[in-house]
Image (tube, rainbow, N blue to C red):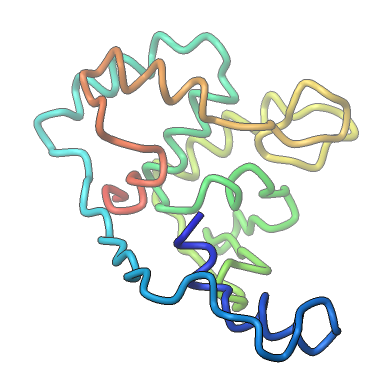
Length: 173
């Protein structure tokens, strides 16, 4: 809560004062609270853990979840970028994909490795009629809702309790 208050204090309280919800002399409720310095994560999957990860992934029955997690590992994409990936964003001839509307606001072209192309071809063979998403969900025309539950099973089976799905971005390759 304090972190949110500290990061949004100028806009929250400033706007409340401007809009007349608070008096002009309203004291700062976060005065004296020290800012929490968030430390960036550095976790990634060590090469010697890859065989256990591969074995754990093979046990995931849902091919969409299994292939989705592998795709994240191969590409380093954010989970949401992979989940919302549509077939028209993939150029099989030139072997790249285009991510639009990224978190930082710029479009991103990503060359695809032979492993990615092979994975995408497998997903293409399971393509659902009327669903534009590479990783389709159970609802018609919708993407998979999350890779999170499957990832928690994989990381437990692989003995990687500290590795988050987002940490695959630092493991990609």
